Image (cartoon, protein in one colour):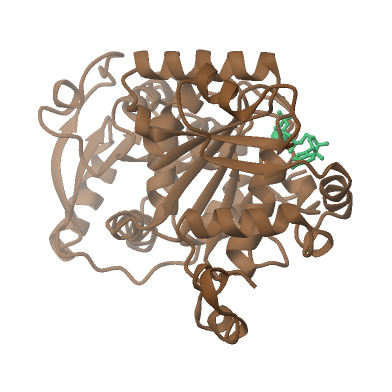
Length: 420
Ligand SMILES: Nc1ncnc2c1ncn2[C@@H]1O[C@H](COP(=O)(O)OP(=O)(O)OP(=O)(O)O)[C@@H](O)[C@H]1O
Ligand SMILES: [Mg+2]
């Protein structure tokens, strides 16, 4: 899938126009005299960094807090020399990365072997500086950290709506992709779909997107390096205007997702969109739980079948035990039929709450949309599309100026709701 590596994308980030009001704090680990002197000269000549301390050995221990490691709060940048003991340097980088994910890690070394660079990157380093460390090299690396810090400070604004099936096959991907395309095209909202499946997600397929380079978990693994340029390389675009970050195509590599990394990634994404819809795999994995805690609303998609309803109840019980407020969950009943074997009232009694939304059962239309890879073109006149347009409105999508024009002439209650 990946013709370009993550490192290529990172290195292709153009140098940013850098200025911050506050200098970035720097701690060095095992740096040789020449590198430490170069850093001191850089700090004296440009008010971009302040050198806080230098640790003369790789004594950083697992389970230490940032204050134990650094004798104070975590620094903005930690620069580790890999030449004295490459293995211990990599372990130190990993430990800092896990304990202080906001700290940018730079490796310094005189050895440019690609294997060594990859090893340093895998341990969490975002930069690999070659000795002798020159001013230009430092400036570019520090500018990237400053740029990312500035971007993180932008206010969050997107609403994040998560969708999870009570069991597999309840229609989550169909709903999320259609709803996302409607938010983007009918209401001109800047919308992103994130496919949070750990493997074999379908959102890209349902949107007819076959060409993409990276998946969401690669983004999460690189969250401390995230800036607008890096994000661009992760986005796939649909003709409706919807953006997508796809799921992995297979679970080929073991992943180490640090606690908090999913939430941190969403904080960054929230500053760039109005709506983010998340297609979650069924189940209560650590990543799903973090997502549920972090989203504005969780929509549990179910169908009127005993096994799905039983699972919905189990999910709610579990989430309540995890102290997630009940108001955070909503139930969407998909494939709704008026003459269902289980009546709506019985469903509400079983799940202990009102059904928030009912999506009609229209198998032929939905399958046609999936097969065509365009969730709205072939559905434009269907009941499902009308229903999902209303759902988008209910979720907060106000019609934009252009859509307002289109509905001039419509009157009464439907006109007020923005239906046409
Ligand atoms: N409103 C609907 N009416 C009729 N069929 C539907 C509707 N919504 C979804 N389906 C059908 O249900 C099937 C499963 O849908 P989908 O792949 O979206 O489910 P999912 O919850 O994402 O599944 P998975 O758990 O595998 O990710 C598809 O064949 C789809 O066409
Ligand atoms: Mg799916």
